[in-house]
Image (cartoon, rainbow, N blue to C red; front, side, top):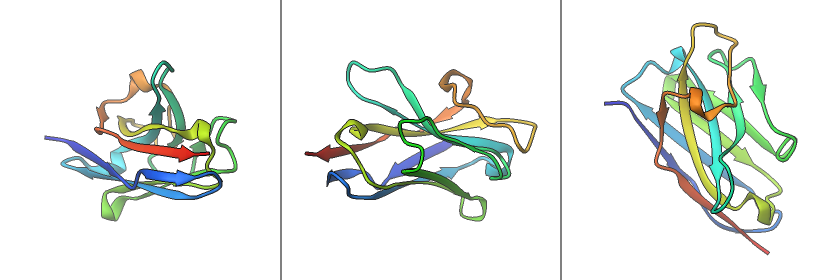
Length: 127
């Protein structure tokens, strides 16, 4: 059974940093593009970062560009999301997801295209 387990969330203040981790089990991580998504009550799910199989291509929406960084360590079966200069609008549940792809440089920011999801970790930014 494939599992994705996120950790690293918490309650922080404006301008603080957090690093989220996602440990993936029972799949060959190098065969998958990865993404981080977030969702808060009453809002649609949003992709905040995506990374290709080979790590060479990344994508960020304007809302987090320059503040968030996604990275992957296939040897450790782990994907990270470094979040800096956090804002109240970053408050949400954050989920990692895996997408099976054939191209090493493919990535996706469309949640419906992902195959596996974690349970999420809550990030709350207090003003």
